[in-house]
Image 1 (tube, chains in turn green, brown):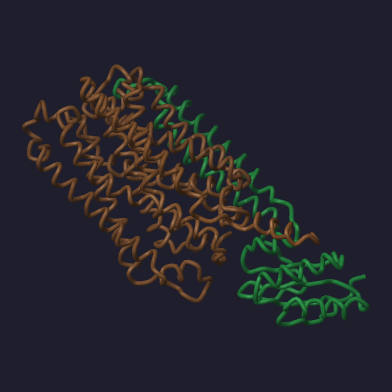
Image 2: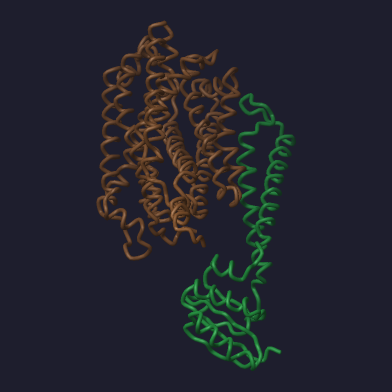
Length: 169
Length: 406
C-alpha cells in the first residue's frame, strides 16, 4: 500500500541517476522521476527500453518518400510537358521533392508520436510534481508505506538529495 | 593474484603501454623511404621513356590528394577549437596536426608542376586569348605558390599555438577554463578562412583549368569540403590502427570517443554528397553544353562512368548505410574499414576530377601511375612519423577527457 510519497530533489543528474540505481537495487519499484532536460544518465539508470519513436519516424520518412514519388511521377504523367527535351521521368528534381517530404512526414510523425507516447497534453499532474522539476532540479517521487519511508529517506539523502519531503497521499 | 614476483612483473609489463618510439618508428621510416625511392625512380623512368603525360597526371592527382589530406586534417583540428571540442582531450588535436609536415613537402612539389606544365595544362599549348590574363604560367605559379606558402605558414603558426601548454590545458579541462587561449582564438578562424580561399584557388587553377572552357562557382567549395573529409577519415583510420598498438589503456579504446569520430565521418560524408548533388542539379537544369560536358564525360562516358559511381558508393553510400547505427560507429574494425574505403574513394574522386580532362577515352592507370602514387604515399607517411608519435603520447597519457564526450 503506498500511503506516502517521498519527494526528493537533486541538483545534478548523476546524483539523481545514482539514487535511482540505489532504489532499483533495493527493489523499490514504485517511483517516478522528473527531469528538466533529457538525460542519458537517468534513462540508463531507469533501464528504460529504447523508445519506439525511431521506428515511427522511419515509417513516416519512408511514407514521405513514397508520397513524393507518387506526386512527382503522377503529375508528370498527368501533364506530359516536354521541358528542354529532357526525358519525361527525370529523377534529379524528383529527389528534392522526395527528400523534403521525407523530412516533413518524418518530422511530423516524430512530433506526434512523442506527444502520444508521453501523453501530452494531460490534464492531470503527476503526484509529487514540483515546478522546479521543470526548471533546474531533478526529482524522484517514491510511493511507499510507513515502514519503508524512513529507510528510503535516508537512502535518498545518502545519494545526494538536496531536499527530501514526505507527503501524505 | 600471482605469488611469484617475477610473473607479476611480467603481467604488469604486458599491460603497460609500449614505448612510443616502437609504435611508429624505424620500420615505418625505412618502408616509407623505400616507397619514395621506388616512386621517384618510376617517375624518372617514365619521363625518359616518353610516358611523361601519364607520369605528370599521376603527379598532379597525388599532389592534390595528399596535400588535401594533410591540410584537411589541420583544418579539422582548427574546427575542433572553433566548436570548443573537448570530447577527446588533446588527442584529436594532435591527430589533426600529425600529417602537417607534408604541407611543406607539397609546397615544394607544387613547383615541380612547372616542368610538366605543357603536359598538364591544355591552355599552355593551346592558349585561350579571352582567359590569358588569368590562365598564364607565371601568374598561376605565383598566385598558387604564394597561396600554398601562406597556407603552410598559417598552419604551422596554428600548430605551434595548439601544441602549447595553454591550449593543452584548455583541451583537457572539464569546466574551469572556458575559452581556448587568445592565440588559438585568432589563428583557428584565420586558418579556416585562408583554407577556403586557397583551396578554392587550387581547385580552380589545378583542376578546373584542365578543362579550361568549363566553369562552376561551387567547384572550389566542393573541392575543399572533399579534402576536409579526406583529412577526417585519415585521422579516424589512424585512430583505429593505433588503438590496437598502444597497449590497453589508450584513448582510442574508449567507445564514446570512437562514437564521436564515427559521427564526424558520417556527417561530412553526407555533406560531400550534398555538394555533389547541389552541383549536379544546377548543371542538369541549366543544360548548357558548356557546363554539362564536364559531368557527361565523367558520369555517362565509358570508361569513366563506373569510377564515378564507385566514388559515390565509397564516399557516401557505404559510410551512410554502415555508420547509421551507434554500434557500428563504436566498432573500430568497421569504422576503420569504412575510413580506409573512404580514403580510396577520395583518391579516386581526385583522379576522376583530373584525368578525364587529359585522357578522355582510356584510363591511363598502370604500373607507372601506381608506383608514383606509392612514392607520394611514402613521402606522406615519412612526414607523418613525428606527428604520429605525438598522437601516441597524447593517447596514452591518461589525461582526463572533457565530460561532453557523450
